[in-house]
Amino acid sequence: MKTKSLLLFLSILFILFFINKSTIYAQDTSNKFIVVLDAGHGGKDPGKPSKEGYTEKDIALKIVLEVGKELEKNPDIKVVYTRTKDVFVDLFVRGKIANEAKADLFVSVHCNAHNTQAYGSETYVLGIHRNDTNFNVAKAENEVIYLEDDYEKNYEGFNPNSPGSYIGLTLMQEEYLDQSILLASLIQKYFTNSLKRKDRGVKQAGFIVLHQTIMPSVLVETGFITNKHEGAYLNSYKGQLEMSTAIKNAILDYKNAIYQNVDDFVYQESETKIVENTEPDDIYNNIVFKVQIAASSKEIELKAYNFKGLEDVSREKVNGLYKYYYGYTSNYTKIKDFQAYAKSRGYDSSFIVSFKDGKNIPLDEALKSKAN
Image (cartoon, one colour):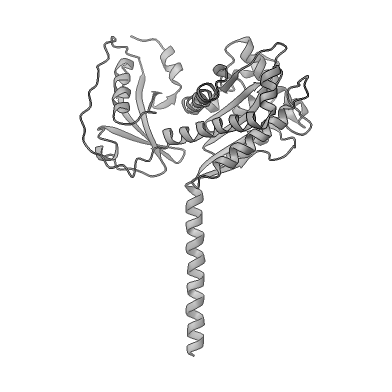
């Protein structure tokens, strides 16, 4: 009898242990910051050509795998790859992988090419092509859909060669434009400041692979494989390691900026001097500006001590994430004062967001609207 009781007791402990272990594992996974890394091209699609024989698909894959290896050293980050070997992956499938993973970020890595000795790095977010150059870069990347089966069905008749096809591309990504630009800016900062690469800037263009995703997304053109020196650099282990380190660091900076750890902060009062903005008021009809100071998977009590002394902080739940805002005004001059004050309290990466009729809209769109 005692033996049976002991066995029953041990069985219950065994079951409870694994239930608890499973629960803990599930919680850890759900709270991880998920990054989808997309190595451009692959398989039957080699990417842009190079006289020296450098292959875009191989360079992109090596950089992506190195970025992922470094990111995976962080226990709170989960990395998902659209490909880990030389295979062809449809553009819509790449977006599907990111969406099904419920990713926090999508980063697509490529190499550029030109018929001159152009060089430098640039990072794109989704947007209507602003000039012929941006359109041509996007067009070249989008033409890969012609290698896909049933591309007309999968992309609803999208034609990479037609400017008119790009008009509706930005709609799904509008909500994430500010965050995409932030990540793109950080990537370019590391390329320029740390690696001394030529900065070709953050740009907008109609990349279909970015259109497929429903999270902040960027496409990185690491450099020109057609440039004699830059191509050799990108094809080298040193170049690939340095570029991957820069991208990894930018992703970590983005994560720290957007998903600031507001829960564990202990506020201590300190004197802060603010220089008031002397610009005239700049009022916008039907537009509300706020400063996003933090985000968290947890719902934080709206008390000043949780937000480094900032009062009148508001909260909104967006796609399962709580976003925290400081300030509420239609005065763009005033919101810049709010941002300056937030930065003085320690929110160095805070940024201005805009709303129209309660819906988040891109800041550049808000600023184009007529001011009083």
